[in-house]
Length: 262
Image (cartoon, rainbow, N blue to C red; front, side):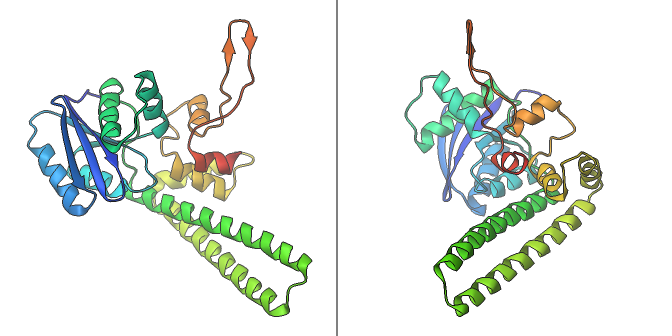
């Protein structure tokens, strides 16, 4: 990757984009809306040098901006919050505001221009939305099942049992529908279909785990086994010092993957 001459760090919130540009130490605030995205793209177009934009993963609030930047032909990367936090600690930065976070992101990108990930394809974004929704509904069903079990011990009326059964049947149907959509999304793209076939050939990897791996780890196939384990948060992290050998523990990584695989 060619290092960018200009970097823009952006702290993304629901309503605002707080930005910081290096070099130049320029701060700005734009609305996190299509109009704000267009204003940022226009700002970048006025820069004659190569520009790289970075922002933390925020649970989805950055995706519309990310897509708009890539569609406009700009370099944009999503950065792991844990790396930004570690970078802040290394600089002795304890204060936390949107403006400070944007500046940290910009300095981090100057230091690590290759960090983070690029925007996944449209198909992978759809697949990620489907697998995320399925996981949410499975969790809802799990809680409902526990509630049904607890109520049975309390001797609940039959009409309440009927309501519980109807709700569980609805959740079962939604999960089944989502699984069919997930299979169609995987089958519609050759790369995803090939990955799914290879993953399902591994003992212990079923359709759900394969779909989550494809959706949450698009880098799969371009990294070592150790790198993949670390990205999933499943690589034991050593805690050694001198003659002391501490316990190895797993930590970090992409939470959705760790939840499915561990």
